[in-house]
Image 1 (cartoon, rainbow, N blue to C red):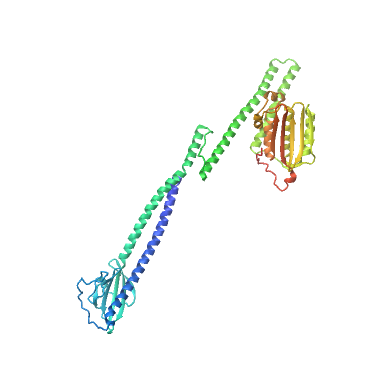
Image 2 (tube, rainbow, N blue to C red):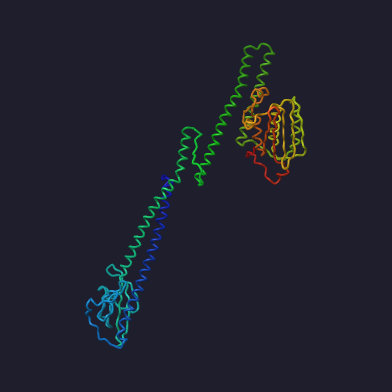
Length: 486
């Protein structure tokens, strides 16, 4: 069964169901029809015998006492208005509905009428309706004893051939059943075509997936277009998934290429300094200078590898996080004091006290340090920092007085290894991963990042997150989940 296609399996299944239902209905109908035919035949036989009995009494009720009726029937021209031949005394020989009637005297000798000869030897049972099978035929027999006005006793026997009526009913039912089978066959063919057409998008999906696997071309799409049914919805979701896979694949390729490029430069410098030291350095000062350059490039490579490892763990949700209620204000003050000691530019801080948030302290500190360091790297003389409560949120801002960022480049600054001014980045040691890491951390902490920049005046980076006072009843974020909110 598994080797058959879905459309064929669906068609076979519903065809069998319809056949079973039709057969059951046919059996019920034919059983009901046979019972109805038998009931009608019984009622007709009893009514015919009773009517015949009343017809025989009419001459006596009028005051005449006819003698024994002759045995020979009248000429065939003597017929009733309905076309039935009459017996010698004027009573009908055969009633409607295939009823044969015969009259016997009290000695059970045939006086008049006619029944199938093989039934003539049957005993008489007054008022009893019997079913008798003779020579493969099914008969209904009804006997009635009647007393005439002159006290003579006669037997009236009525016989009806039930097999003929049942056969006619069965023939009609069989004809109806054959018509039903033809309708089922037509419905099965139509259903097969409908299912085939409904599943044609699935075949298109399979062909598209097969072509993508063969060609490694992630730009191919199913492209079923607009539709409301489940298959069209599935195709749309798959196309969206392919878009995301293509974006991730291309981003991974770009990330690998950028990381290789960034690592190639310090590696080349280290190799060059080692060759210089081995071949040309003679004095301790020359060796010290070479070792200093090697250490500086090694530190750069170490920072780059550490940042790449951190970003990789964030991407794979493998970064261990411990959320707790921390004092955002105290944390920022500590960071500002450290930055004043290591930076030569002016740092101005405006921090509102007592602002509590629920976050991982190390990640939040990394976010703040990266934003402040970025401001010092691209600012000219001064960096301004502020922290304030705004409704249900805490708002952190860092502003510099640098050259600013062109508006068309603002969405790209969050990309890994992207640098607006590459020459200046090389001077300050930036590798283009700081803001990308800030974006990832903001997602993990369920915060929001904003940036505003004016050319020639500087840039303002804003980070918002919910205060702990308004988050007491809500569960802490899962340390293994990240919800984009940028």
